[in-house]
Image (cartoon, rainbow, N blue to C red):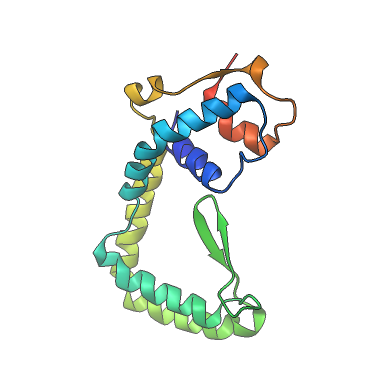
Length: 165
């Protein structure tokens, strides 16, 4: 099991991906694995948190998103989360202004951005590595025959690490 799968599993649970699942054996295994993998998840996520040196750049980037990004009817920034990363849409009417402000910000933080990108690349490589053997051995498995028939593709894909043939 990869560290990335731990992140996907715990975040799927937090986002209620498993709420519709029925079947005592599978629900029990999910519950056990959420408990067993939570501390590992926290330590993996902590490794991906940017240090203090990146915070001024990230703050400046966020301020640009808030100023030029698409807003919800409530006035809040519309943020779409995909695989633990966020995306903000810049409306066509704001794109020229955003591009100019973004260019100026990138020039100001050029060295920091380079280090930040290197940090992210190392973290992405880190989460592609396998978890420790003792963590792997703690995973509560469920037999394929014990799975309910109504699992969605996303649910099955996320739970695949804990399914035995």
